[in-house]
Length: 304
Ligand code: CP
Ligand code: NVA
Figure 1 (tube, rainbow, N blue to C red):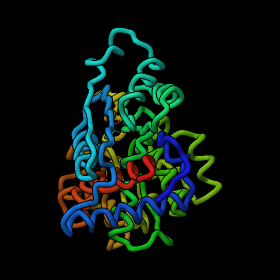
Figure 2 (tube, rainbow, N blue to C red; figure 1 turned 60 degrees about the vertical axis):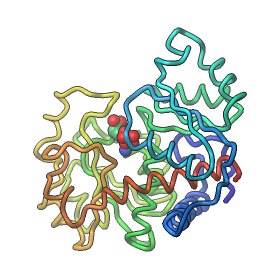
Figure 3 (cartoon, rainbow, N blue to C red; figure 1 turned 30 degrees about the horizontal axis):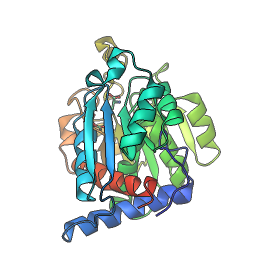
């Protein structure tokens, strides 16, 4: 399938049709893989992956995804490149564009991705920044589509930190027309600009009351209270016990509600073991779907 954008840094680059098309293509690629394998549509294509921060899922799913589509991925810790010795982002972007067909980067500061994409002639994908995590949300909406069949009339409850994953989920909600109720402590709300733009397309409610958010929800989501770029243990006190997803919160959601978490998770902090390891949790399908949805994204960005 075709998408117009050169880069994927936030999700806001996509039209609703493109976003929904990517989700459907992800589901197709998953079925195709399980039937015997994907077509080598990225033969001779190379992806450069730059990681300024640790990763398990993003790194392994991108590398495996490139391999399954007949391509190749190169993993670089930013310390291993000349970036660590002061070579400019501009020169790095221009150099990498001469060797490889796409760049995926996980960075501390989102503005680095803006710079990379400005100077790279090849597509740049955000593999997580302090502000957004668009690849996670492609996998999350693929999982929601698989489990709920349609996005029509759904409500997502986000409870916890209004962080990078939450910001991208708001864009996902807007692109799919799903309602979202976000419960965070004061001072931990998602990006204002993201909320404002998305409120033109769907119902985005901000509250400090987790019970209100959870009421009648089809999907309940949270993430760790301390992100890689914001790892202050004191933050946890601002969230507990009120913003923990536990059985009582799940009881307020619909009976057939599903629980999502991008992982890694801290059990008994943002979510109890009873929920994340319980029957409503779909976190392992969600983690697997990173592989399929990123293959759909890579194929679209590389016009395969
Ligand atoms: N969810 C996610 O991005 O996981 P990693 O940090 O392991 O890549
Ligand atoms: N919000 C988390 C997500 C990790 C995948 C972080 O930024 O560390």
